[in-house]
Structure formats: structure tokens, C-alpha cells
Length: 124
Image 1 (cartoon, helix red, strand yellow):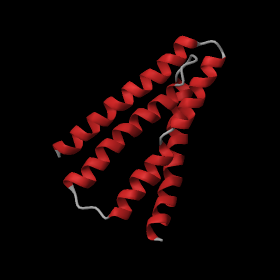
Image 2 (cartoon, rainbow, N blue to C red; image 1 turned 120 degrees about the vertical axis):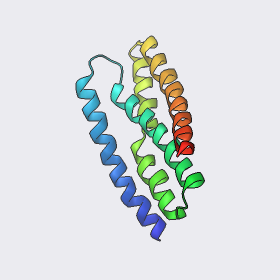
Image 3 (cartoon, rainbow, N blue to C red; image 1 turned 180 degrees about the horizontal axis):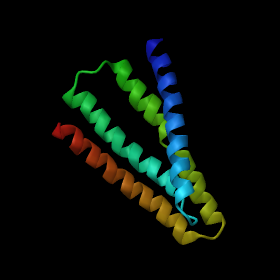
Image 4 (cartoon, rainbow, N blue to C red; image 1 turned 60 degrees about the vertical axis):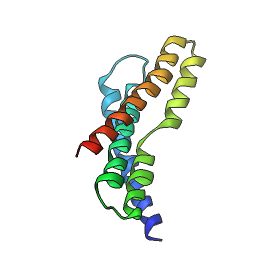
């Protein structure tokens, strides 16, 4: 029960963090490319790589805390479904180049961010 409650509370916080950062970035970046979602996904990928590595290789953290942070907070924070929907809408609108850049760029940047997070977590 403790794990479920921790995941729920952390998920609420992650959703609020996503809402805040996505809105902040989107209001400041012009054009059709969904920069807010991109920034959230890449920063979430980095955070997941870093925090998971830190919690499993560097620190002794209770599984319920690790679940709250990774499943709850970061699960609610990252936005794969939004990425997919925005890419679909770009395709539907005929913006094929922007759609491809969004999908492939997000995947490449996300993988790179996870890698950097793991490296940073191991460096501590």
C-alpha cells in the first residue's frame, strides 16, 4: 500500500512538473515544432537514466522510493503519448518533415539523454 500511495503522490507532482515546463517552453518557442514536449521527454529520459543508476548502483534506496520516483514522478512527467499524438497531427497536417524531425529527433535525443544520465549517475 505504501508503494501505491507513494507512486500516486509522486505521479501528481510529475504531472504538475510536466505541465509547468511544457507550458513554459511552448510559450517561448515559436513555430510548429512541439518544443515543450521535446524538452520534457529529453529531460525525463536524462533524469530516468541518472536517477535509476544512482538509486541502483550508487545508493541504497528502498524499492518503494525508487518506484515513486521512476514510475510515479517520471512516469507522469514524460510524455510519450503526447509525442505520438503531436507527430500524428503533424503528419495529418502535411508537415511531414517536421513530423519526422519530431519523432526521430525525440528518439535520438531521448536515447542520448538516458546514456548521459547513466554516465552521470555512475560518475558520482
